[in-house]
Length: 184
Image 1 (cartoon, rainbow, N blue to C red):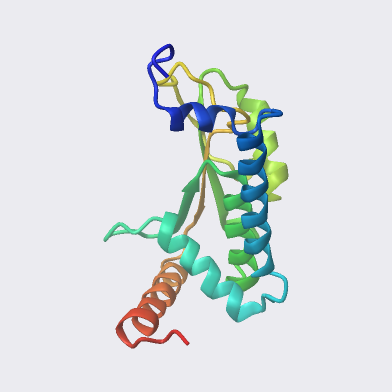
Image 2 (cartoon, rainbow, N blue to C red; image 1 turned 180 degrees about the vertical axis):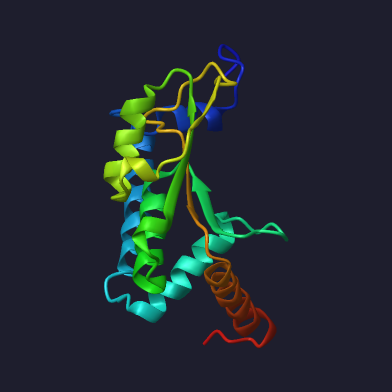
């Protein structure tokens, strides 16, 4: 740790996915996989219908969506491709947005190929490129490059009443779970 000037935990995070014959490393990987399998079991019998899709989309939105006091759209931004895909799938299933009203804004680095990244997100989201707004291009702040970083993607849907419905859904969820003790 002195050699690299970082903690043992940092070195462990850097090396967790490297092959090793070290028994501690192997045991740690086995424990990590066992815990992941436990988490997967929660989903085995979980079904999503239209109502569940609305609630899940609203909860994800509560975490990562626009919540400005003067917000006039459903706006969801993240750089995690799977989270964006999950939100959009649930949003489409639960709220039935008009596909032509969906807009996408990308924030990418000047090291990206703008056309390649736009095409990537267009395919992933199943949204035509003509519904993409002009991207914001920035210079990376850190020297370290993230593997498979595809920029930050923002999905926008300009419909004030739908925004209020999403907001009302996660607020009602909060009240039911926290204020009224609705778990169990």
